[in-house]
Image (cartoon, rainbow, N blue to C red; front, top):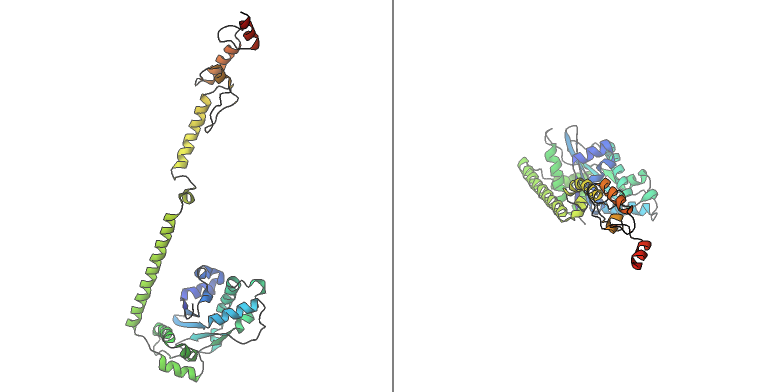
Length: 317
């Protein structure tokens, strides 16, 4: 996305500073931050607002990728710019050493995760040399309570000018100061409130679209994925009915049946009761007694067990 800008609020930096890159991984996992040409960071420390810009992110990505793949040697020349805009005095790069160290550690972690650098990723010193840290001479605030107006105006003025002028605004000398003096426009509180309202409306609209998308995905998901193929009330009903089905199946056959049906199978007719044409009762003991009486009857009597001897006797008769 050429020319695209990715902004990070002050909360992002605070979490990054206090808990490390792993704590902010979820913030950037949906997007590849190296697809943007510029990163903007907002800070609020000691009740003072200021910001920083990482310019030429694409060149930074290429340098890190080439180094991780051993395509390029260490040149020591910066390929991108890290500039701090502070309306209470620049103070030089050493003033921002902690912020610089924190951001460089985050960049190195991104390179390891996003670029697939693996174990060949160079040391933190190589990542640091890829960035030139500057503190341009930006317009200063006249009141101690105007830092928020200035930091928002820095952001607006920087991105309203042309690409060529942006390079000049990143300069730390007199040339950069001259460009800032001519191109800087301090926003009023009313203008900033209007901008905030627009940004809030865009955020709410994006959140609504994301919520609607999640609801649509949940609605279109297969029923089996949500309930495992069974309705929410079916498991309890099946569990409750299973004992009754098993006990009912046991009642249909006596203890002498060697092929007891279960709740999901039926008798094949091979048990003694089925072969004798005896209708099973609901009392297994009674069925066993009836079966014993049938098998002890004498040959030729009514209900006696039919054998080859009785069949031969009846044939002779």
